[in-house]
Length: 602
Image (cartoon, rainbow, N blue to C red; front, side):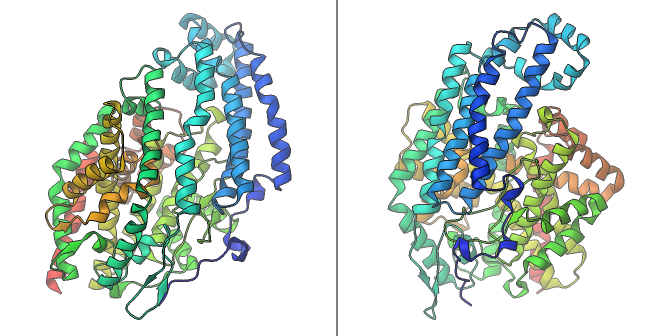
């Protein structure tokens, strides 16, 4: 059966789109707020030179910053979501530019604040807390600022860096517009002459097709097209690392990795522990690759054979209605209150469900919890996107609970813990599905999906993280990140991570060119650490019940009220050690064992 035609945005049913009027009633209302926000810089600057003068002045300023942060967040989310639903729409591209201008202008105007806060003597600040009890709410944010003393410049230089941030987003913006709006692929044809639309959004799903020759055609058509633009894409990647180097050096960090992780209080050792632990567990990945080759009955396993399910006859269409019900049932273990919040998101248009022409690929939750988060999907009526629904709603409810239970100044959690809630939902969903089936074929199908999630989240994201580390080191050594350099390094890593039973086809050397996360500043490793933590938390919830759920909800409600390692300890996981990663990969190995046994039994 041919894939569904991709609709124009105007053809998508309203009930399947998100309702951005919860942010602003209209574009005109947004523009009016944008004009009003032009007053933010002057409002902030009235406090310049006065933050250490009294506890009352400091408290007033911090409250003003909170109010501005909320309003800037709403302005940006509306513009960003509007643009992502049709990336070719120049009107909303302009709104994004305006929203970024508002942010940069406010950020530049507040550049004086961190140095002034750092200059307040410790004893004076403690006296401020004693004299103004409401300042205690801001102890954690103030401590976070003051710990950055050695990486903070003079007010004049801070203002210059704030202005430079607007330019620093250019590589990501250019790459996103190119990938989502301008890069077009030829249709691909199957053995019966049926045409399929090939896009960034359909690429992976088309590679799930059972026809080996069709998959090869999809793979080669996609990467042949990417190859035509590899030098342009490489130039944006090179520019990304140049700007990261500029800011790392300006802030007196030894390298870009240290600069990125220090912002979120994650020790650099956590990054290296992850890569080392995965390297030490490559045998399990190689066994999985060997099993995939065996179950598909192939003499050679190619990169276009990574996605087809190993038990295809157990697959079935899963409508969005069925997916929602299944997710609700699976997450009932987290309590009635959690399920009611899920229903609120499902029933009140928090989610933009289906692909349309020009829509941003992939899926995300906006994170901001005021008035509620928004979730972008490209739902495909299959098991994988049902898991994506559970994943993104995990993000959404983490944001929602943090916003409800924390003041503005500590409601935002850092990226390191962001993937835990989303992946915990996925693990609980898989447990629920496995607990409801005794059919061997269905069980094999689910185990295959779970293995692919493990592989895609721990092994694949760690491979991406190692590639990012290599790119950073090369750039810091003065090596230009050309297409040839990037292809060479990526192909070598692909061979390392997939092992001897995988043919690393020439096209896969270009995979780096389709990964938007390489513009996110050492982001992807947190998928792998988050997945490891989530496996530990989900297994504890299944094993211990209410006490573990209570701890987990305290974690979800904690926002950024502590450093991320401490936050995860609330839920019973210590990510400062390799233990959660090693345990997760041992679990992966046991699933490989079970699937292999079921395959041998027939």
